Length: 296
Image (cartoon, rainbow, N blue to C red; front, top):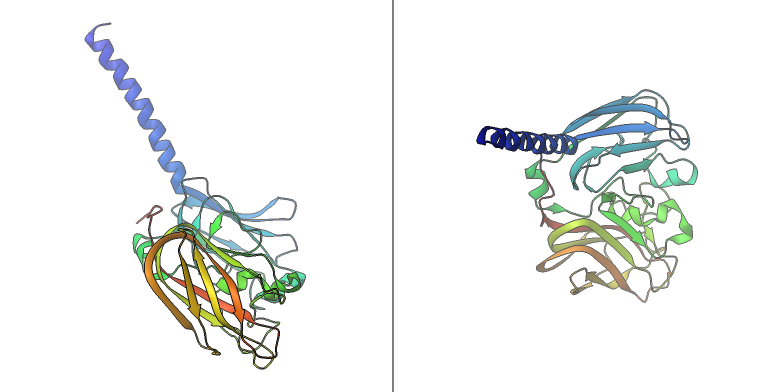
């Protein structure tokens, strides 16, 4: 093989490899948002690169799902599945499914959520400024039991009667109304009187955190309250927080640590007569420790 042939061979290999890289980069920028029927049939779809919006022009039916379909490397998105609930900054590792709530499940949501016959849905890559900002890393208005590919995600070993208004997701939905219980906007995480109740918040990605803010449910005298709770982090560290009988947020500060999840456990109830302590909201403040991709 002469030098000219060798050069052409190397050039063809280079161009082939470059084409594969470009195709992969384009794939990582492509995604879609969809509304699917219960049988998987697509009702509405929007596709694009880096930013996609979709207007769905019909009432939702039981079994409908809102989908963010993305197959690239894990990264942060700003995602709005419902215009009444607003956008959420989430870390995405695969296809995100938001099941439209019907029946008992609707009790944990605003009556305006998913209502009507015109719905504005959108998703976009989060900006570097959004990703790196100091913020509440636990907030996700679209979290649910079925959520497996978007974060933060809340789960618990017990929920009162498995009712939507006492589900773990309520503790990270951003709604802080805590002077009543049993209906939206007074949804909370209820522990069904279980002294071994434990709530876990998985961030999906490493974060640096130095502060937690807790909002106890404060429907006194119906409610009791926790005078102490323990926060166990993925790095093996533990922080104990002392609490008071307050309706306002209570801050627990600690040395900064890098973690991927936190568990809230060892809940010590006060001596009040009521057997019903509950958690309205938990906020975990910090920054993303890993960039997770940024489009802008």
